[in-house]
Length: 158
Image 1 (cartoon, helix red, strand yellow):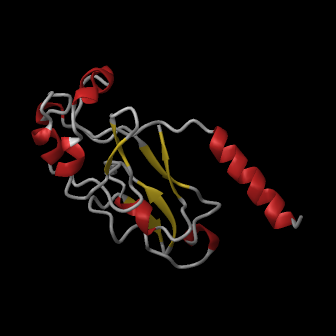
Image 2: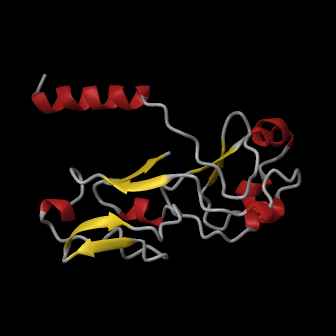
């Protein structure tokens, strides 16, 4: 076994063991309602999502998946929710912390890259000169930067 294959296998086994928090659409007050009310729904919030980032899981609750796009906070998922789990009245930023892994980031490693900054709708990524991007307080955790990072250096935390 080559060294690269060995370390890749360790990395993939560690990823399986990590417990990843489920990102919910940003229009709820009580997360317990997802488990009480969403089981009787046909996933209307996912159908209404313009960006197609809401995925209905096996337990019939919605989660956000930023692999193809980000949240525009358009309110459509909340408007379409028949059980009032998601309501426009409860609109808030997505409950996640977006960060940049400086070990993976091309810019932090002296390669000019602005892939995360360009799609950011909130001007939430600042660069020190042309290198060293940082997430600032404007971040709404919308997730648009995640798809465009060529080395997957943008990470989601709780």
